[in-house]
Every structure is written in C-alpha cells, then in structure tokens.
Amino acid sequence: MPQVPSQQALLIDGNMWDDAVITQKAKVKTLEDKFSAKMLENGIPGSIRAMFSNKPGELLVQTAIEEKAIMIVTGSRGLGKMRRTILGSVSDYVLHNAQCPVFICRKGTL
Image (cartoon, rainbow, N blue to C red; front, side, top):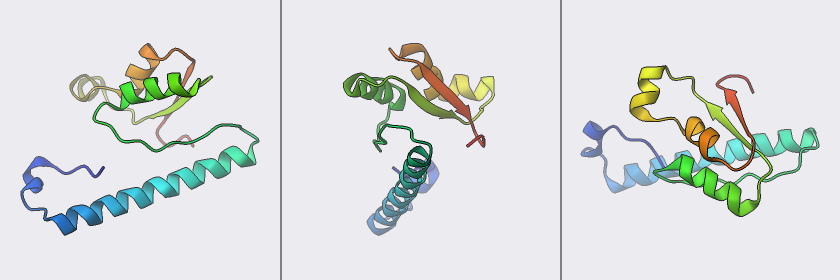
C-alpha cells in the first residue's frame, strides 16, 4: 500500500488514495514481470507473490513455510544501524527467523 507521511494523511481524499493504490499496484506488477522474466531467462524455477502486511518479515517467513520454500531471496536498502534500529529490518527478521536459507541482495545489485 502507498506510504503516506502522517502530516499528509489529513489532506488525502478517497480519490487520491485510490489513485495512489492503483499506482503502487502497477509498480508491483512491473516488478513481478521483470523478475519473472529474469527467472525464466535463467531457468530458475519458482514463483513470485505480491502480498501486503504491516509486518512484512513475519509474512515472508510464514509464506515460506506455507510454500515449502527452499530459499528466500530478499533485498536490503542498506539503512545505517541507527535507522535499522528505529525502523526495524525486514531482511534481518527474515534472516533470523526463516527455516530455510536466506539470500539478501543489497540495493542496486540486480
């Protein structure tokens, strides 16, 4: 879902929110298509699922269990230690809680 700074939340009407959701879904679809094509090009079996959650790390770990994943590939924005401490780190959560191997790609490596 779109991220909206709290000070802007009061200024958004329903149409603006709907437009933001449509824009985000289009970006997700573009990423799905891009990485599906890369997987196909390289003969990598697997699937891509777009899901939304307030706790993405927990959702990734749970989905990996449900899908019987043999590996999780996730990204990392490379936040500093201070920001990561305050905001949390999805990749860190997944790395420490997943029941399968985890491959973390730094931003800009793919």
